[in-house]
Image (cartoon, rainbow, N blue to C red; front, side, top):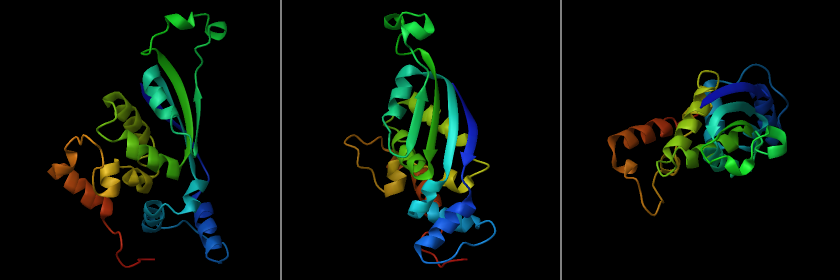
Amino acid sequence: MKANLLGIKGTWREVADAARTTIGLEAGTGEPSSSWKRRMILAEHSPIRKLHINWKWTALLWWVQTHFTRHHVGVEWFVSTSRTDRTGIDRSAIGQDAPVSVEGEANLQAIIYISRKRLCNQASKETREAWKAFLETFKESEPELYGACVPDCVYRGWCYEYKSCGYRLTEKYRAQLSHYRQGINEPKED
C-alpha cells in the first residue's frame, strides 16, 4: 500500500479571512503564523473546513478501505470498482484482501476526526498503517495539522473504550499528550 498527496485545495489566507469575517473584520494580508494555524486547528473552528487535502492510496486492502469509507462527513471517497462488467474478473471470486485504489478528499476537520478513530490502537494494524501513510504525505507542508492528528485518548485526555489497549498508562502516551497540549490556553502570541 502506498499513499500519495494529490493536492491541497484552499489557502491559509482564505481560512484566516473566513475567521476574520466571523468576528466582523475585513480580509487580511500575508500568511498566518504557525501558532495561529495550530490554535485554529486545535479549536476546530469552522474556517478550517475551507482547506481540503486530496490523496490516493494504491494497493489498499479492500477490507481496509471499508473502514475509511464509513467516514462520510467532510470527506469524499472514490474507490476502484470490482464490477465484473468493468474489470472482466468475476466479482464473487475477489477476496476481501484484494487490492484497490482509493482516492480521498477531506477537509481538515474530517482529517482530525478520522485520525481520532483510525490511529486508536483498537483500529486494525493495517488501517492504522494506511492512515499513518496518508498523514506522512502532508507532514512537511502542513505540520500544524499533522501534530493535531492523534488518537481519541490523546484528543480527549482519557480512554473511553470498553477494552482499553493500555496506551494511556504508558510514558509514551503521557509524552504525546503533553506535546499535543503544548501551548493550549497560554497567552496569545499574535
